Length: 354
Image (cartoon, rainbow, N blue to C red; front, top):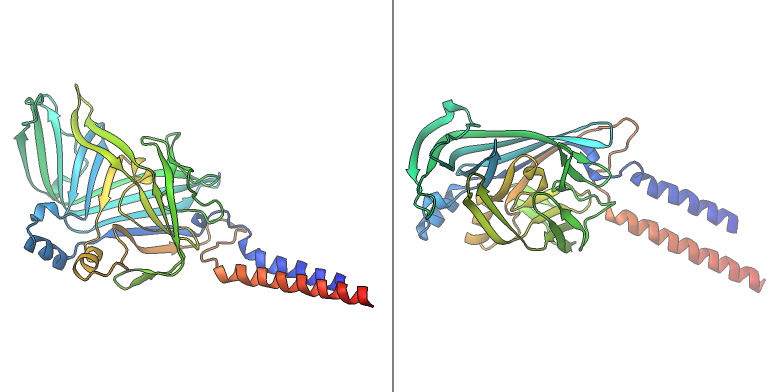
C-alpha cells in the first residue's frame, strides 16, 4: 500500500511540475511587445478648460542622446514603442526597438559654433526656428526648435537570459524593464540598474484581486508592481561647462508586471531598455487612462506606457514556452500532496493497530 501511494505521488509530481520545465524566463515565449501612450482629445479639452496650455499636455517627454547631443522631445499625438524579440542562441535575446512619435517638437541647445545633428526625416519637418539662450552664463548658446509630423527612433540591444540584464556594446545597463521572471523575480533590496543610473528595488507589491484596464483590454491579477528607491541625476549638454537640460533630485522607477508570466503591463517611465538606445529620461502619459482616472475617478486603469498587444511563438527547438502559469495549479499540487501524506499516515496507524 505504501509503495503504491508513493508511486502515485511520484507520478503526480511529474505531471504537475512538467509544465514548468524549460521555462527559465517568461521572455522566451514572446516575439514582440507593443506599448502605447495614446492621445485622447476629451482629456486634452478637460485640461485646457482647467487652465492648462496645450503645449503642456504630452503623451511622452524624453531626453535623447544622439551623437553626443542631448535633445528634448515632446510628443503630442500617440507614442508607440515596439520591442521585437529574437533568440541569439548563445544565452541572449536580441531586442530591436522602434519608437514612433507623431506631432513632435524636438529641441536642443548648443554653443554658437555648433549645428544640431539630425536624426529625423527632413520631409517630416513642419517648421524650425532658433532662439537665443537667456540662461546666465550661456548667452552664446542657441536653442533650436523643430516641429515635425513624425519621428522614428530605432535601435537594438541584448537581454542576457541568465540574469535578465540589458547589454549594449559590452556594457550592462541593468535589469530589463520588459520582464520580471517568475522563476527569478525582482525582490526588495535587489539591484535593478547600474549604468548610467544606479538604482535598487525599494518596494514590491502584488495585487491578487484587482484587474487593470485600458480601453477594451483587461489585465488580470496577479499583478506585481516594482518600485525602485529614489535616485537623482543631472543631464547636461556636454560642451564647455555643460548646459543643464534636466536636473532631477528624487526620481523613482515604477514597473507593473503580469505576475503570472512576468511581462511588463505598464510603466510611467523609461529604464535600462531605453537607456541603451540613448533615451536617458522618459515620462509617459496615456491620455485615455488619465481621462478615466482624473475625470471619471476610476482608478482601475493602467497608466503611462501601456501594453497594447503582443505576439508569442516558439523561439527555441525542444523548448516549452510558458505563458500563463495557473496559480491554481500550485494549490492542486500541494493539496494532493497533503491528501497523500494523510493517507500514508492513516495506513501506518492501521498497520500499528493491526
